[in-house]
Length: 257
Image 1 (cartoon, helix red, strand yellow):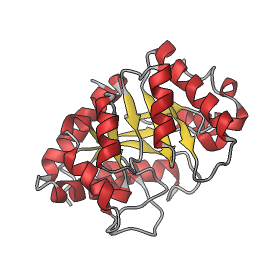
Image 2: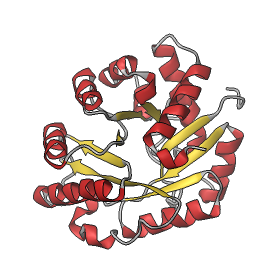
Image 3: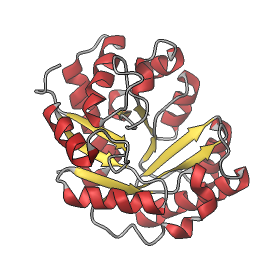
Image 4: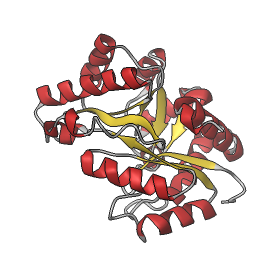
């Protein structure tokens, strides 16, 4: 794969201790692979602070601050003061996770609603994590109002969910899951998604794409996702790289040059 193509990994966890070689090594490897921009994503107070620290140290690395549904029990007040840093570009990841239920569902719903409100108040994009909770995710968004830039991270739905997300004005972010043979619905969603609403991400260190499935993921692997989407759309990798990087600037306006 040629590093002449320029990619954006709009969702990774560079600050995670499992990142191969640590943040500096992962960023160096990503840049060698043509990844020009990375967004490292917070999930609670500690990881949000860590994300800010990494973003502050490296050019073209940005951070989000959020309270993941797993950590909703901690309360949104634990992160509310972290958004004034110039390299913080979004609220999240936040949302609902009814697969694991690490926090009570009512607590998840409250934390999600509060973070939607924060996105409105701060005029920042919203990064959503939703698992086994599409209907309630959409319900809460309708009640609170959909932020102007809303990103459905690690999209795992099919065409029906994709169309609802797109009708709400959202962006669909595809992870390594789209490269899995069994992910037929996700692949169908990637085929129908307009390129100006399509993002790609690694969610590293999780969900390494084929042919690295089972290994620890890293931002350098984002090109495999782009190449796979190009193949299933009968498009070129160069077009997917350019389009998803342009879409990332629409989804996260602070990335714009």
